[in-house]
Image (tube, rainbow, N blue to C red; front, side, top):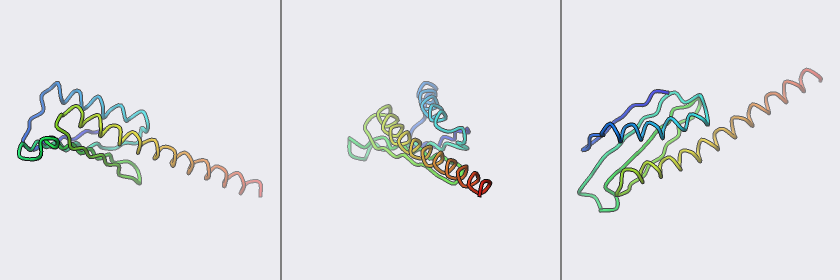
Length: 114
């Protein structure tokens, strides 16, 4: 999986980038088919105090694009919120993918016997 970072009005420290990369790589256990993760992070001090950080993560998968967005006053809580959203979407994607595989196998078996 390739991770691309895009930042606006903020520079990620090595520690923050490592933290973010660890979290994104954990999503790989749901599917080995993640081609790319695009991380957009912006900081806006003029926004409401509860929306200083905006984090958006887009995952490119075969036949699908998953997206999680969060606006929070803290970087780490933004990451945690986005990961919850993406985890839920990945579980749904994996379930749909497995159902599709199962239906295909069933149709092939039926065709062979029929």
